[in-house]
Image 1 (cartoon, rainbow, N blue to C red):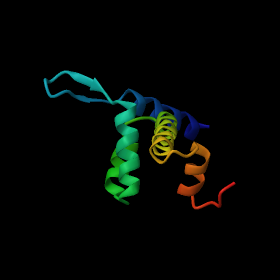
Image 2: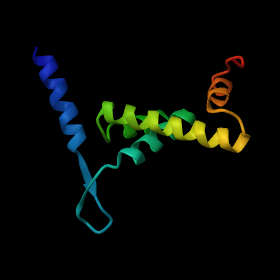
Image 3: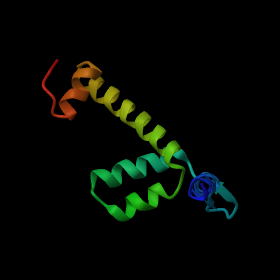
Length: 98
């Protein structure tokens, strides 16, 4: 039971974590920045940057924004290739055309 409470507390602290702006005031971590950093680090297989990005925000928030980033990327590629998002997503995953 205490492990669950500790885990919830740690997620809450991570969600509220702040850093300093260049001007000196506190600034909340941007979820989109964290998602972009996480995805690019995964693409480059850079474990240090992956760990840093996952420490910026809560896992739930990061997951949500990574999902949104994936959707936007598939839509952008589909427009660029003049294909459906479904076909692009399947091709990126190495799946046969449906």
